[in-house]
Length: 217
Image (cartoon, rainbow, N blue to C red; front, side, top):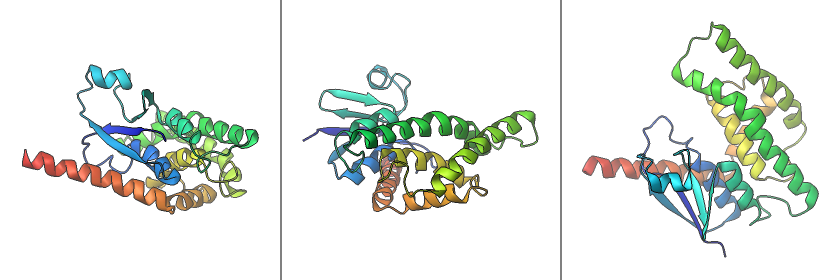
Protein backbone atom coordinates (compact mmCIF):
# COMPACT_ATOMS: atom_id res chain seq x y z
CA UNK A 1 0.00 0.00 0.00
CA UNK A 2 1.51 3.38 -0.94
CA UNK A 3 2.14 5.93 1.81
CA UNK A 4 1.02 9.15 0.12
CA UNK A 5 1.22 12.70 1.44
CA UNK A 6 0.26 15.67 -0.70
CA UNK A 7 1.80 19.01 0.31
CA UNK A 8 0.26 22.33 -0.68
CA UNK A 9 0.25 25.92 0.58
CA UNK A 10 -1.34 26.51 3.94
CA UNK A 11 -3.15 29.58 2.58
CA UNK A 12 -3.61 31.54 -0.65
CA UNK A 13 -5.81 34.60 -1.32
CA UNK A 14 -9.24 34.00 -2.85
CA UNK A 15 -8.58 34.55 -6.60
CA UNK A 16 -6.51 31.38 -7.28
CA UNK A 17 -8.59 29.11 -5.05
CA UNK A 18 -10.06 26.26 -7.03
CA UNK A 19 -7.11 26.48 -9.44
CA UNK A 20 -4.07 25.81 -7.23
CA UNK A 21 -2.42 22.83 -8.82
CA UNK A 22 -2.66 20.49 -5.89
CA UNK A 23 -6.22 20.09 -7.21
CA UNK A 24 -4.86 17.99 -10.08
CA UNK A 25 -3.24 15.61 -7.62
CA UNK A 26 -6.27 15.52 -5.32
CA UNK A 27 -8.41 14.70 -8.34
CA UNK A 28 -6.20 11.80 -9.41
CA UNK A 29 -6.09 10.42 -5.88
CA UNK A 30 -9.88 10.59 -5.63
CA UNK A 31 -10.36 8.92 -9.03
CA UNK A 32 -8.16 6.03 -7.95
CA UNK A 33 -9.55 5.93 -4.38
CA UNK A 34 -5.99 6.03 -3.04
CA UNK A 35 -5.73 7.04 0.63
CA UNK A 36 -3.61 10.12 1.27
CA UNK A 37 -2.84 12.85 3.76
CA UNK A 38 -2.56 16.58 3.11
CA UNK A 39 0.32 18.55 4.60
CA UNK A 40 0.70 22.32 4.63
CA UNK A 41 3.65 24.54 3.83
CA UNK A 42 3.86 28.31 4.29
CA UNK A 43 4.75 30.66 1.50
CA UNK A 44 8.16 31.59 2.91
CA UNK A 45 9.89 29.08 0.60
CA UNK A 46 12.58 28.16 3.07
CA UNK A 47 15.18 25.39 2.72
CA UNK A 48 12.78 22.60 3.73
CA UNK A 49 10.35 23.70 1.01
CA UNK A 50 13.05 24.05 -1.65
CA UNK A 51 14.40 20.62 -0.79
CA UNK A 52 11.16 19.15 -2.17
CA UNK A 53 10.28 21.77 -4.79
CA UNK A 54 13.31 23.72 -6.01
CA UNK A 55 11.17 26.50 -7.50
CA UNK A 56 9.26 27.15 -4.28
CA UNK A 57 5.97 26.06 -5.78
CA UNK A 58 3.33 23.47 -4.85
CA UNK A 59 2.36 20.73 -4.89
CA UNK A 60 4.71 17.91 -4.19
CA UNK A 61 3.87 14.33 -3.28
CA UNK A 62 5.76 11.96 -1.05
CA UNK A 63 5.31 8.21 -1.40
CA UNK A 64 7.28 6.72 1.46
CA UNK A 65 10.82 8.07 1.04
CA UNK A 66 10.17 9.18 -2.55
CA UNK A 67 9.44 12.88 -3.10
CA UNK A 68 8.04 14.05 -6.44
CA UNK A 69 7.35 17.58 -7.71
CA UNK A 70 5.62 18.85 -10.89
CA UNK A 71 2.04 17.75 -11.44
CA UNK A 72 2.86 15.87 -14.63
CA UNK A 73 5.48 13.77 -12.88
CA UNK A 74 3.21 13.22 -9.89
CA UNK A 75 0.29 12.08 -12.03
CA UNK A 76 2.48 9.74 -14.05
CA UNK A 77 3.67 8.21 -10.76
CA UNK A 78 0.08 7.77 -9.59
CA UNK A 79 -0.78 6.27 -12.95
CA UNK A 80 1.59 3.43 -12.14
CA UNK A 81 -0.43 2.72 -8.99
CA UNK A 82 -3.89 2.41 -10.53
CA UNK A 83 -5.38 1.38 -13.86
CA UNK A 84 -8.12 3.92 -13.15
CA UNK A 85 -5.51 6.53 -13.99
CA UNK A 86 -3.49 4.82 -16.72
CA UNK A 87 -4.11 1.69 -18.80
CA UNK A 88 -1.89 -1.29 -18.13
CA UNK A 89 -1.23 -2.22 -21.78
CA UNK A 90 1.79 -0.70 -23.59
CA UNK A 91 -0.25 1.16 -26.21
CA UNK A 92 -2.58 2.65 -23.62
CA UNK A 93 0.31 3.76 -21.41
CA UNK A 94 2.09 5.28 -24.39
CA UNK A 95 -1.02 7.15 -25.53
CA UNK A 96 -1.63 8.45 -22.03
CA UNK A 97 1.96 9.58 -21.59
CA UNK A 98 2.11 11.47 -24.87
CA UNK A 99 -1.12 13.33 -24.06
CA UNK A 100 0.22 14.20 -20.61
CA UNK A 101 3.16 15.90 -22.32
CA UNK A 102 0.88 17.47 -24.92
CA UNK A 103 -1.29 19.02 -22.20
CA UNK A 104 1.70 20.56 -20.43
CA UNK A 105 4.08 21.30 -23.32
CA UNK A 106 1.82 22.07 -26.27
CA UNK A 107 -1.37 23.46 -24.75
CA UNK A 108 -0.46 24.91 -21.36
CA UNK A 109 2.57 26.72 -22.73
CA UNK A 110 0.11 28.60 -24.97
CA UNK A 111 -2.73 28.92 -22.47
CA UNK A 112 -0.76 30.14 -19.48
CA UNK A 113 0.45 33.50 -20.89
CA UNK A 114 -3.02 34.03 -22.36
CA UNK A 115 -4.74 33.34 -19.03
CA UNK A 116 -2.28 35.45 -17.06
CA UNK A 117 -2.84 38.36 -19.43
CA UNK A 118 -6.59 38.01 -18.96
CA UNK A 119 -6.23 37.80 -15.18
CA UNK A 120 -4.00 40.88 -15.05
CA UNK A 121 -6.34 42.85 -17.33
CA UNK A 122 -3.68 43.57 -19.94
CA UNK A 123 -4.85 45.53 -22.99
CA UNK A 124 -5.98 43.42 -25.94
CA UNK A 125 -5.13 45.90 -28.69
CA UNK A 126 -1.38 45.32 -28.72
CA UNK A 127 0.92 43.26 -30.91
CA UNK A 128 2.00 41.29 -27.84
CA UNK A 129 -1.59 40.31 -27.06
CA UNK A 130 -2.24 39.33 -30.69
CA UNK A 131 0.76 37.00 -30.59
CA UNK A 132 -0.41 35.35 -27.35
CA UNK A 133 -4.03 35.11 -28.53
CA UNK A 134 -3.10 33.69 -31.94
CA UNK A 135 -0.78 31.15 -30.34
CA UNK A 136 -3.57 29.79 -28.14
CA UNK A 137 -6.09 29.80 -30.98
CA UNK A 138 -3.71 27.75 -33.10
CA UNK A 139 -3.35 25.14 -30.38
CA UNK A 140 -7.13 25.00 -29.88
CA UNK A 141 -7.66 24.70 -33.63
CA UNK A 142 -5.61 21.50 -33.67
CA UNK A 143 -7.08 20.12 -30.44
CA UNK A 144 -10.71 20.74 -31.39
CA UNK A 145 -11.06 17.92 -33.98
CA UNK A 146 -9.30 15.49 -31.66
CA UNK A 147 -11.81 16.10 -28.87
CA UNK A 148 -14.73 16.17 -31.29
CA UNK A 149 -13.99 12.56 -32.16
CA UNK A 150 -13.50 10.99 -28.74
CA UNK A 151 -14.77 11.17 -25.18
CA UNK A 152 -11.34 10.97 -23.54
CA UNK A 153 -7.86 11.40 -24.95
CA UNK A 154 -6.42 7.90 -24.53
CA UNK A 155 -9.55 5.75 -24.69
CA UNK A 156 -10.65 5.52 -21.07
CA UNK A 157 -10.38 8.43 -18.64
CA UNK A 158 -6.78 8.89 -17.50
CA UNK A 159 -4.29 11.28 -15.94
CA UNK A 160 -3.96 12.85 -19.38
CA UNK A 161 -7.56 14.02 -19.11
CA UNK A 162 -7.01 15.43 -15.63
CA UNK A 163 -4.17 17.57 -16.94
CA UNK A 164 -5.68 18.58 -20.27
CA UNK A 165 -9.09 19.44 -18.87
CA UNK A 166 -7.56 21.41 -16.01
CA UNK A 167 -5.45 23.41 -18.46
CA UNK A 168 -8.53 24.13 -20.58
CA UNK A 169 -10.69 24.85 -17.54
CA UNK A 170 -8.70 28.01 -16.86
CA UNK A 171 -9.14 29.18 -20.45
CA UNK A 172 -12.85 28.41 -20.28
CA UNK A 173 -13.11 30.56 -17.15
CA UNK A 174 -12.17 33.56 -19.32
CA UNK A 175 -14.53 32.43 -22.11
CA UNK A 176 -11.60 31.41 -24.26
CA UNK A 177 -13.33 28.26 -25.53
CA UNK A 178 -16.30 30.07 -27.06
CA UNK A 179 -15.20 29.07 -30.57
CA UNK A 180 -14.11 25.57 -29.54
CA UNK A 181 -17.31 23.67 -28.66
CA UNK A 182 -15.66 20.25 -28.47
CA UNK A 183 -13.04 21.57 -26.05
CA UNK A 184 -15.72 23.23 -23.97
CA UNK A 185 -17.83 20.05 -23.87
CA UNK A 186 -14.75 18.06 -22.87
CA UNK A 187 -14.11 20.39 -19.92
CA UNK A 188 -17.74 20.06 -18.87
CA UNK A 189 -17.52 16.24 -18.96
CA UNK A 190 -14.38 16.29 -16.84
CA UNK A 191 -15.81 18.74 -14.33
CA UNK A 192 -18.90 16.56 -14.05
CA UNK A 193 -16.93 13.67 -12.60
CA UNK A 194 -17.54 13.10 -8.86
CA UNK A 195 -13.80 12.92 -8.17
CA UNK A 196 -13.32 16.41 -9.57
CA UNK A 197 -16.17 17.77 -7.45
CA UNK A 198 -14.65 16.17 -4.34
CA UNK A 199 -11.14 17.46 -5.10
CA UNK A 200 -12.40 20.97 -5.80
CA UNK A 201 -14.53 21.08 -2.65
CA UNK A 202 -11.65 19.78 -0.54
CA UNK A 203 -9.28 22.43 -1.85
CA UNK A 204 -11.79 25.19 -1.20
CA UNK A 205 -12.42 23.86 2.32
CA UNK A 206 -8.66 23.65 2.95
CA UNK A 207 -8.20 27.37 2.31
CA UNK A 208 -11.43 28.34 4.06
CA UNK A 209 -10.15 26.60 7.18
CA UNK A 210 -6.93 28.58 6.86
CA UNK A 211 -8.96 31.81 6.73
CA UNK A 212 -10.47 30.97 10.11
CA UNK A 213 -7.07 30.22 11.59
CA UNK A 214 -5.66 33.54 10.34
CA UNK A 215 -8.68 35.52 11.61
CA UNK A 216 -8.27 33.97 15.08
CA UNK A 217 -4.54 34.60 15.32
